[in-house]
Amino acid sequence: MIDITSLLLTLLGFTIFAIGIVMTKAGGSWFGWKGKKDKRFVRALLIWIGGFALYNLSVIPNGIASRQLPPYIISAVSGWSISVMVILSWLFLKEKLFKSDLILTLSLMAGIFFLNLFDRQVADTSINMTAFYLVLAAPLLLLVPALLPGRTKRGRAIFLATFAGCTGGLALVVMNVVVKSLGFDVFAYLDKPFLYLYLLCGASSFVSLQIALRNGTMILIGPIQNASMILYPVAASYFIFGAALVPLQLLMILVIAGSVVMILRKH
Image 1: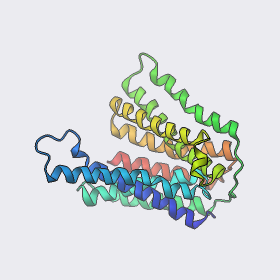
Image 2: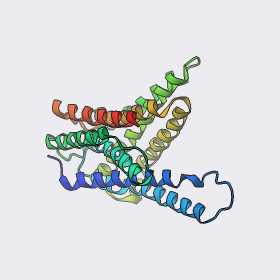
Image 3: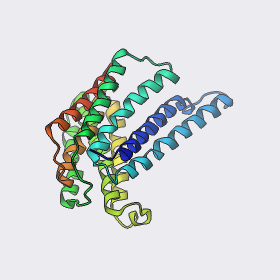
């Protein structure tokens, strides 16, 4: 069974991440503000800045947890942030909360519990670097059909959303490799490519997601991007770390990804 402290840390990390996202959404009205920049403008700006700070600080507990957790666990737990965002949006932004949200959240948490319960991987620092770079490069193949002339907007959006999800998941994988290779020696990161690859994955995910949203609807993009972010690190873990999951674990990852997809599609 996985280290409980590390699991709690990554749950905390994605809770902070979700709070940050909701705060940036709540304070987003400062963009393109028209009229006098009064207290309402300042309040919106401060809320947005606070949310942006939390969004970035969430990497700290996840980074610490990476010392013990394999990336497929961390990426699976990322699904928890969707439930937190939905509940917080209901509480503070007056958005709808459906009964299915609560049922699917329970399903998601059960998936995380059993995924960890049956995990038998040891905390190993051995990394197949050839596989690491191949796994990093593989999502680039998705850009080929996305950029082909004559592609419909919907088709382009699907490929770009998948690319955004894979590269977002890869950011978690790279973070895992960084911590397992270099520990928490921040200055050592500057001499290695990992930090820059992490930033590149994050930026690629963000930019491709924005382009995907211009070509398709959120109800199409959101589920594809989040499911890819959960599933791709499973394959990456197999090739990079030699992590072999038992069938029940694979089923639980599908349960988690499916729960996330259904929550997003409902909204």
